[in-house]
Image 1: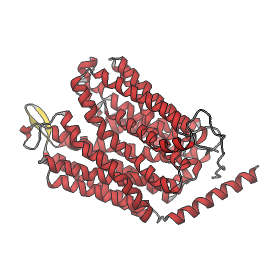
Image 2: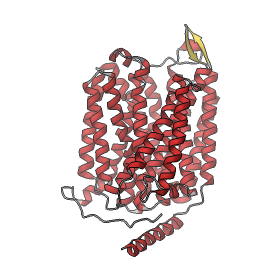
Image 3: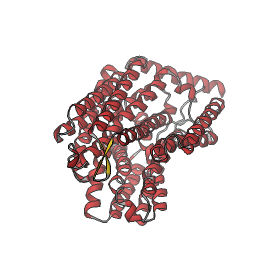
Image 4: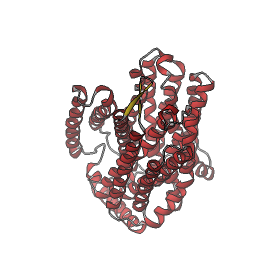
Length: 497
């Protein structure tokens, strides 16, 4: 498909001096990514108490998580494409604004319907990371780009590790609305800082937005992820779940055909089907699956009653503190990921990260009774996740034209989201199947947890194999390909003119 030449836009006024703005770009964008992850995590400590606080059922409360998942999956590729077309800073600011508006709505209500709607608005923040990575590609020199992109990718894990204990502390010692007022203030600060400090990218891809493609993708993703997330509750063989999966397959087939025929598609499928891009997306899906099981299983395992024989009976605050070392590790190891990618290529970094994740789950299988071993295993998994997640956007940046970086990274983040949703469903199915009654309540057995670890470790090894299958990359070769793609796009644009 023809790639239009990037269009340079005149510099915007009302921004800080260039040197100050250059120094602030990375920390402001990274803080936005951390805030996004915190916003997605803060509701978790509330889930056991929300039915009582809102006068609703546990099934209704679960939608405060599902709504964010669905809207984030739908809006990430859509807003990524909009950023490529209309300006990345503009769309990034809008996404942060929707997230903040959703937080304000949560702070003002105890109605479960309004809460679910507000959490759906907050799902727009899932596009923050791909949009920020695209801005970093456009604005930073090559020698700074690798470490900045690695840090940006790690913000997801850092924010999640910080959000859980922070939210637990607020919920334990203050009214639960206070938590959302706090995130609202942080969100407003993030919007202002982004608009003030981040320069609008001059790289654009002109054309008309593919509204039909966006609607088709939304319908397919909602059907797929709704079926995956609700399968355990509604029954995997129920007519509703089977109907959702059939609808997802049918709509996705029609959408694929429409995208191939569209002049300016929402997702460039010809680009996606190239091995360097397509296998990167497969690796993202598998890594998302393997990573997410760590947080899910660790939180449940350490909170299990001591009467189970393996549980530690920890509070939600202590549970969050157990995951905190993993977040700190992600922050510390992101520069290492950039150095490995610069020396060996992001394909090797991704494969190494997936292998480290598998090693972390081996530690979990070896000992899941002692607290220090649990923390060690979870931290090793977090370290591998840092390496893998930091390498994925670098692979995408090297394989796609500058005008499609936000949309391509948006699809990559979408694949991680699908992997995480599938991981959640698979872990839940295993733990439900391997449960025993304790005081009249079914509680997962240690064997069930170990099976979940084994499954996640096997998926991590599959991610490692997918990474090694990606065609070899070298910085010089990628630079030559990028220059060639840019020259080709410029020539085609001049011929069209």
